[in-house]
Image (cartoon, rainbow, N blue to C red; front, side, top):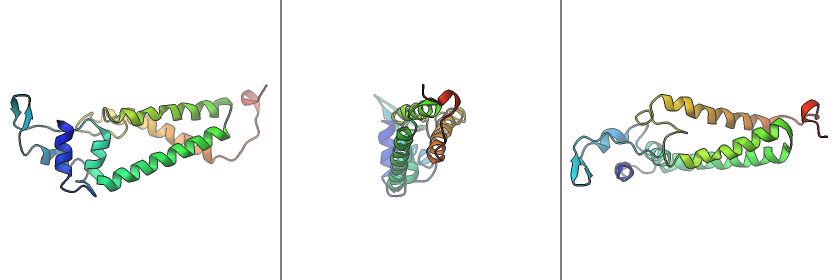
Length: 154
């Protein structure tokens, strides 16, 4: 029901969206039916990052985010192929396993937090994913190093 209202409001400008946090004032213009009751001044948020992306930046922004995710995934697979043992291997594999955060985006705002939903505390949780993704990109960009110490094969 909440997602339907956000999509309904956003369909007025689906290409570029409504702008950051703009759907909330539009979505509470008319009452929201809830069972046999009416919520007269609903404080709407979708609780879904993909719907929020569509609403804020439209199909263009959603496509660009998809492009970013695909590029990041490809870079992670390249780094995984390059680093097969040691800390770097565990780091890259952990970050790729953390891609489950892209599934969690369907359920809440934990990757791109919407301040009306999770608040500023959501930013503290989401920044870790972005930092780990950045670390994986750095690992992929590092020049090849000789293997020494703890990472050396036995």
